Figure 1 (tube, rainbow, N blue to C red):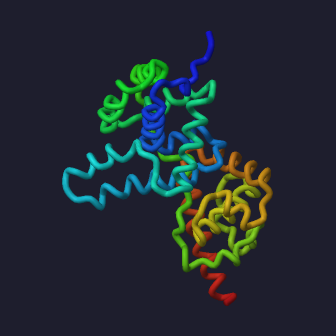
Figure 2: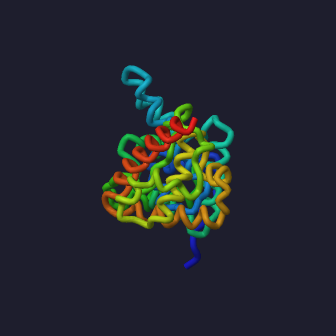
Figure 3: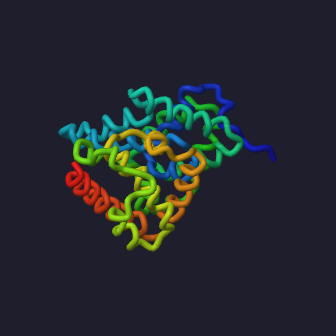
Length: 254
């Protein structure tokens, strides 16, 4: 039986909106379905902004605003480009139907109404994907195995003090983790640059002079390790401690 391609659609606009809805409403599930997609950090940044924004809007309109906004591409050009590339990858891939079914099956109940409003305008292929998602049991989500790195230390941490490999004086919190030591140190260096400068992971890797192949290997290794119970939370705390050490060491050196 040939695989369905979700890209063969009579209403591409609604196909895109349905895919964007599945991407942002279920984040970080997308990171698990497409772990090798290079612009995940940009998609994560918009997903976080969508979750923060309703809290700033008082009254019962907050969730309604989110429902109306979550299937629209971001206004930021780089974030919009990233999600459009991912959407086309999903819709045009022979495996896109399976990926989309998985994402839509994780939609929270509050987004079901939005999905229903899009369904009548979708092609038969997309309608089949939506129907397949509705028949799947909901999967309980745990803490994200891949957490994006916001610029939490901008103005406090000088990125010029960060190197690959990290200075041994900075790595004690990482050494206490039961993980791949070399990759943890490299990943921490990448994240420290993101903490200091912001921007996507690939830019931080270039800043440190890490070859693309080595960056990719580290990303996959750390993501796999973080999926084990408790590792993501432990690593997040270790990174916070490493960043404070880096800030302190940077002040001493200045």
